[in-house]
Image (cartoon, rainbow, N blue to C red):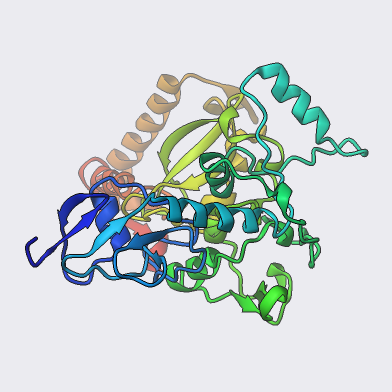
Length: 375
């Protein structure tokens, strides 16, 4: 075996100095499950789901933060590894309110299951991320249920006073992804680990609600949470992931061009998530993630309007554009291009702003164009 190779599941792979077992495995499409690992953040090995067996090591090692050595021999799904993962998953399922039981694929069986978990007050007690939960995925993959262990009762009440985010501490597995997303990715430093041992909890400020802390409600913590501990206050309690269609688009709130997915049900946007692609790489601001209600607002204009005799009437796009073009042309030819000015907006894309300045200079014949961001 050469100096810069290792063996994973009996196959030999090259690696770069400083790489982790997880990085090499993923580059070669070898699946090692993780819960706490977060792209762009320092690996911690906190959840221990990614444990692997390394020949010569006294214990199982976490793949996310174990550096590769030349000649290393790794097993990612040995009986010892699988047994350890099953126990870890079982402990997590028993650590709080993780009702991850999976009904069959039959539609009637699913309907019966929903009725079964309905509360006495008519509310749906099913986990808001049921079917979109990494812990549930792993429980299904390794066929684990919490039935053999006593379920730990919730130590902290659910926090619902925040405007956009619900914090359900009974479902938190203390993986730390939200803390890293807040502190290392977004660098807002609004949340951190608090207390110790079994009392451990993710806290904001000195254990205040998010609304009373430095949180800017970017929602990065919600997007990275692998369970149902952090959810959107509206969409996740009214719609299931599989009921929506994803439509990729560009955020319209500023000119950065953040890529986002609109989750659409019945032709209505019910949720927004960031796309892991430039320039935002999955991150969004509070407006991009939660400010989508204007899309389906009944107050939005659906047709161009032309005012005649003090009242608006509907018009076609051709009629409206011709009217505006003729008005501009008349003003320019009568008073000169410098009698007009154009204001563009950071809520337009860079491409739209570019077209606006070309139109101003080439058609209106003036350099009177300004942008709100200059202020």
